[in-house]
Image (cartoon, rainbow, N blue to C red; front, side, top):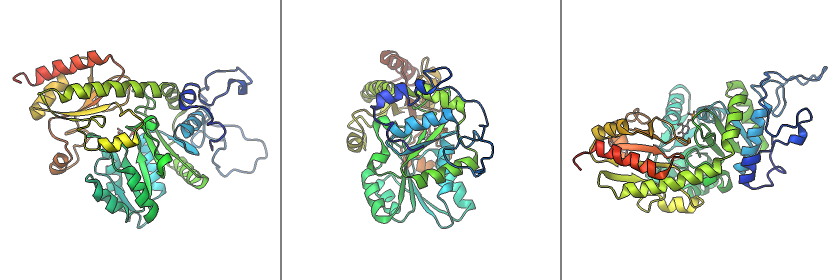
Length: 399
Ligand SMILES: Cc1ncc(COP(=O)(O)O)c(C=O)c1O
């Protein structure tokens, strides 16, 4: 459960090799961690400790050896004491939120968090006695509200305009005022930024995205420090039934082996695509934290380790009609709502991910009818730019 002496090698080596040791596998000497499919594990006859305990192997909803391999590697990668794997990113977030909500709990959440996270909090606040404030950007609004909160929930890069909250200022204020900061690090991954290093309470990931990385798994993760926090979240995961399945854990372990390489490559291509788009008259605005024109470029430069991730958003001249034509004209990039996989995807936040926000708020956040979000995958950068170029030509023929 607790990492420690196993976190002695570099992240690249950890991701590539994991913590599974073939010499511990007396039966077969398997180089890779086996997928343990057994739902139950034998207990010594006469064992009276029937109470579920973190780390015990008894029942797969509580613990599973394949899932535990993933958790040990990710604990090291996140620089935490531990990590816990969940059946989805939402499973991870809802477990943390439910475990730490009690009557009177005050939660501040950024306006740019994933729609279902905001929906979950707003839904809970209508049913339970918890107070949810949705604040920022502007970031000063978020910081002010944070000071009067118990929990603050932000994303390292907010979807879809990739706004980056002043995280270090937020941790400093929360240290002073006693709030806990949960950072959804899905868009950045621990390759760009490790929230726990700076003072976050929890780092959350939808492993569906970059960590598994192949658009074939749904999963989530929480990483943190300290045994009490681990035990509480482990127990809530157990009773909510939100544990990751061993097959999903195995696919995540396999995808994760190349996480560092994929992030490097997609960030490099994304920078190239963003710079190309910025020079194009058919595009009125480009959002990429690596560009100097991005409102949080300075924050990105100080937080991230030299690369800026694989998501680029841009606004087409020609609004909704042009955006629809653009999406239907793409030949390589698939119109689909996720991100972080090998295949490049384009999505339409205005009526998809952000459809539940009032029109006025969408526009205020830059989520306009012409906005496209692009998740850059592993394809050749020139092929991607050509695909975008041709779709832009079809979408805005008179420009
Ligand atoms: C930033 C962010 N957090 C959480 C989630 C939820 O993850 P999942 O779909 O794995 O439940 C998503 C999904 O798109 C996301 O983009």
